[in-house]
Image (cartoon, rainbow, N blue to C red; front, side, top):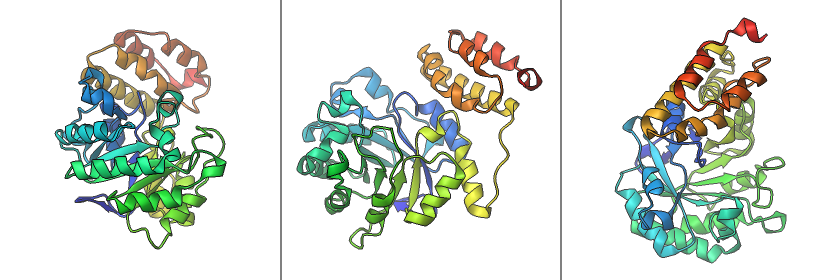
Length: 325
């Protein structure tokens, strides 16, 4: 699969952009475990244009993270155009537009998934961003606003027509948020639409290698984007690749391996952010890193209370597998 001049392989696995999750540290960890492409956390076009420090900080990345896409969102075509130009300055491989975020504070302000209720405006925004930059522009979206308005097949064609070079589709409506089961049927319809010639990337409920292979075989998508399935579980990219290539499963990471990767993630985050926020944000990953470890709940609860790096390191390094059984 190729987007612009970036070759991503036969069946690439992409790390989805997730707010307060896919920062530079976690992107680096996921790249080291086989993610073929990663994205910044989504960035408000309005905040970027206003020179908000937090938004500008989200544009920072290391070359090891490449290929990388900068994801922007907003509902004003002019602000989105300006944001695309600002994103272009850091030379990512592509710019991605978020038309799928279901979170109330985003959607109720007319951005993210809300634009599925105003397709002409969605298309206008996409067109303005495409015109503004020489970089490839892609889109991430959902099936529709709700069960009555699953209009993704038409939307995909219209976005392609204005120059969008790939589309990622999450298999839920905005009304579903993250509940229920992702429906990949319409994703398959978009992929198999004879009018479509750009890559179609499937997203939603890919939590292990079995699901990934099924989605590939049943719906013919060109790639898979993994979001929540990667939180505290960067091994998922290696696991899927091995299973697709030879049908075998990777061994479950040992407690020691989990500790090592969790600490590497934590230290990277602290080093990159130089801020105690790193210690707070990584808390979202603990459940994933230690999922399946018996009797870990008490340790996890203690981890959620610690606020110093050396305390967290001491607790994790002191864990013994035989003591948790």
